[in-house]
Amino acid sequence: MPHQAPDVALGDHPPAASAVPAVRLRGLRKNFGSVTAVDGVDLDIRPGEFFAMLGPSGSGKTTVLRMIAGFEQPTDGTVELGGQDVSRLAPFDRDVNTVFQDYALFPHMNVARNVEYGLRVKGVPRAERRRRAADALRSVRLDDYGRRRPSQLSGGQRQRVALARALVNRPKVLLLDEPLGALDLKLRHEMQSELKQLQRDVDITFVFVTHDQDEALTMSDRIAVFNAGRIEQVGTPQEVYERPATAFVAGFVGTSNLLGGRAAEAVIGMAGLFSIRPEKIRIDGDLARPAGPGETVATGAVTDVVYAGAILRFEVALDAGGRLSVVRQNTDGVPGFTDGRVRLTWRHEHNFPVTGSE
Amino acid sequence: MTFSRTTRRVLLVALALGLAVIYFPLLVVFLNSFNSDTTFGWPPGGFTLEWWGRAAANDGALAALRTSVEAGLAATAIALVLGAMAAFALQRYKFIGRNPISLLIVLPIALPGIVTGIALNNAFRTILGINLGLFTAIVAHATFCIVVVFNNVVARLRRLGNNLEEASMDLGADGITTFRLVTFPMLRSALLAGGLLAFALSFDEVIVTTFTLGAGLETVPIWIYDNLFRPNQAPIVNVVAVVLILASTVPVYLAQRLSGDSASGGRL
Image (tube, rainbow over all chains, first blue to last red; front, side, top):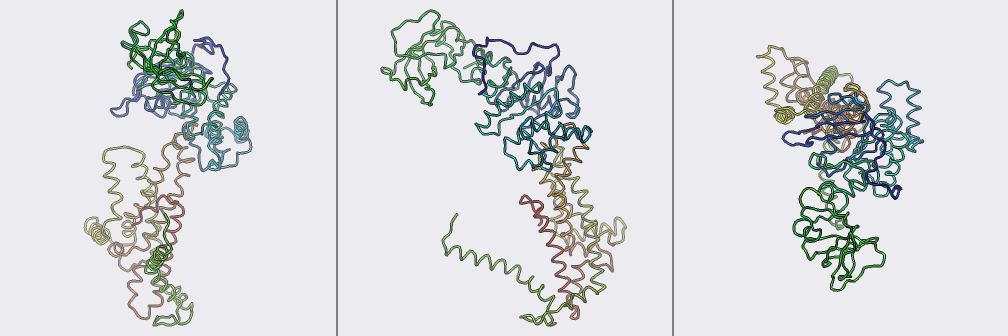
């Protein structure tokens, strides 16, 4: 996983907001027949940002990406690129390039011809496009692969060819549709940091679609969380993870506990729905100890212990009603609590009110 | 799945018998084209190339071959253009009546030839007032040759999806450039396979041809039929039959290799 500065303050926005967003979506809507895939999306993506559109399948994120690329016409609303309304322009008239989920490399051309395709159709002279294609292949560490056919490459190599083929055109915005979805886990982690590094080097706005919250959290400057054709929350990974705005975000980005109804009133002392991250909760068997300052306390019974190697996960049924999942590092092995009775403590500020229902 | 040794032997014998029923008679035709014994008894007598030489000098057989090649090439050309266009329209665009039209395009290959033949004959002569000739046979052949081209191209388009074309447009190529640099190259082998099948289909067609070919003209299979029972022509008929077999099977073999395992074009 890429390094992250340990103490980044919440809400610490990367690159200062520039006047003209790289991508601006206003009231974007898309119907397929009677199905509404995208239901009113407003979004500003800043120049140079590594931006993730995160959501479950069918949440509309890919349709939004395809409307930015020009493969789908919005039913309503506008797409602006660098301040220019491109809503009605064909894909070949837009200064964006796409890395497709299945890479869509041309099977009848070798790697070098694939990479120089964009330059070729724009009439760049042969010598220059050869040179730029070679440069692009070098930037993805595939210097000697120009003469191979796409079918002779591994998944990871195809992915890098697809990147080179898009980046060689120096688009203002690069769109990536589930770019790492087809790779195995180890390769995916490698490519995550490689993509991040590449994006810093080329200084192009990256917009990528993913359903993988880890990927979104580790790679992006900001995340838009999609659900049912709408954006639930836009923010930095820290904002989205630490302060989920809705119950959906709390549940989709990382795992989360939700406490509501009578249990919330009894434990937290307030009505409403609250999200509490499992790793923020401490678990011990010291039932008698009162709450410290700024602490929320609840008692309950362990119903299940999941052993996951590096961590242990406890499922706890609260005496006040409701259930909490608690994650603890496997520092001392699996503890035995008397009769399975436990005390849970966490700091008040980790109770996040969210909208939505349990 | 594994079989016992006995089962495997029984299955092998069944396979050999099945193939023998189909191919042994053809092999006999092939051997007889080199058989020096004109009674064609079994086993064959000596070896000779005389029949091949006589066939090569037989005006009727040569004229029939020319007619067949002309009809085959022309029908294939029509089938390639119309079949490919129909495949594009039906595979890439959604419109009302798409499925019925698709069925109507494929149907001619399943229609009884005798009915198609009589119907076309009637339409050409009495309704359109066209005299039967090579042209009418070409049109008749094209009606079912289109089907194999259409099937091949539809299968290829379906397998290709829209991704490559989208990628091309994304990289800045307009529709025409995309067709030239991506779509057509990806379709080329499907067109070739469809074309070969269409040619083979036209080349050995008899029934529709008898009703649509002009008087005085003969295609290869019709020439064979006409000469089959003339005793002095029998040896040459064997030669022409071998030519017909090759002209019909080699394209099918090539087409199958070109279109991979995906579709032999639904040759019925």
